[in-house]
Image 1 (cartoon, helix red, strand yellow):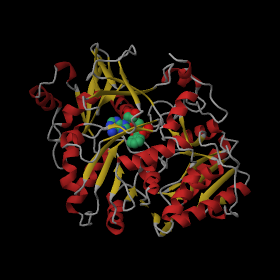
Image 2 (tube, rainbow, N blue to C red; image 1 turned 135 degrees about the vertical axis):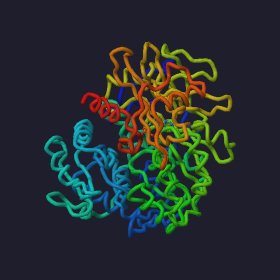
Image 3 (cartoon, helix red, strand yellow; image 1 turned 90 degrees about the horizontal axis):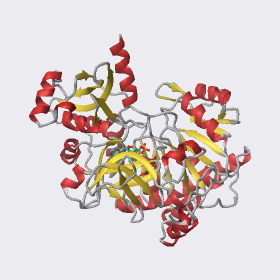
Image 4 (cartoon, helix red, strand yellow; image 1 turned 60 degrees about the vertical axis):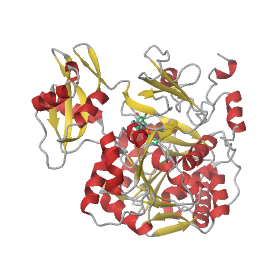
Length: 547
Ligand code: OOB
């Protein structure tokens, strides 16, 4: 191993830097162009000034207006004493204040900690303490939940939080609207240092923070916009929470702004919010997590909104089944694009022009020619081509270490800087990846290790079943038993366990992989971004089994 590959110590900002030689290579290749995120908005404004940048409710901001508002908010934040390097926990829904605040903070060199609206006191207090945040920004009330009360709790639990800023009615806190000051010149942050902190998507343990630099995140957004063929005519609907990496920069809000397009912010991904916006604004692109797609397809059957402007539906966050992928073009009148990504960095996209089998049956190929991927067995050895193994990655927009987490970093990265994703994948000769599950998502039944993903794929093929999550429930005789938790297809009655087993045997599935039990639910518990939350599901089922 070369000297340049040995891990460098974290900087004061919490960033584990890339080795200098590697960083120099990324600069020379043009991936890292030395522009801060605040500077990027300046450049986009110079190019697209009077074009429409953001639509949110009644508000419509041109690039020039967004840029000016970010400047005034940065001035107000500076007047409050917020300085370069300070962390600010941001928990806003999809409203215009989000991009304004995001650019105001990054322009100052202050670091947004981007939490999701579904996070509650456990996560927010943990993230505020971990980052020693000086401020916390929320909206007053969303979907019946009062964030001002949450903020009061957070202040009690995270003493570093000096300011609570509220979009809307501030209650006992300070109104975000009043954070307004004269624009001024700030020292330009180092483009190689932390620009923002993303929250890890994992459902195990407390969330971790992912440092993303100006250089790496700018690349992430720009290169994604190119790979997805966005241009000035793109109207991107952000209906997933925009603080998540997918709608923020893959290509999302930042990628759309990088090419002069328009970002429409939807308060929710539900069809009743999103469909009227698609029609009114002529939306061309949007992104969903797969559990939402059947609902969009069902609604499109009877809803008379005009969705004809929609060109691409991106699906990512969890695996899209081939069956659902195949129904999108007819059901929604647009192409589907698979996105296999992670807040930690690596992004894979299917591309326009890929054949149907690739679009429906793979999770895409890496964004960057310098994404280095390894697929390894449990001993860390490369598997044979086409075999399943754990995906390890390093590259110009993949982190080298979590924020302030030395113990986790000791195991989540190899000595030469590869991030161990925990995802099981196989690589096709074309270079495209197929996601085959998670390393830890296996069910140990009678000494056999069964992939939950594999069981799910087979069970979903049953015509009476729309969605399936396979989980292991503890069993005194078998160690674990396989439970297929299913949502029946619209109107259909779910099969019994015996009927399902007969169906799977007919498909040629091995006996040891057959579900022992079937549990029927009308909907799954979901994570903050809307993926099926298997941990909550397993906890719920073992609790109900215990009664
Ligand atoms: C996205 O990011 P995270 O950080 O919320 O979650 C990452 C994890 C991946 O490691 C993988 O386990 C899973 O979510 N995942 C997928 C997937 N996309 C993500 N599993 C199967 N198929 C896919 N297409 O979820 C995310 C970030 C950027 C773009 C898109 C998704």
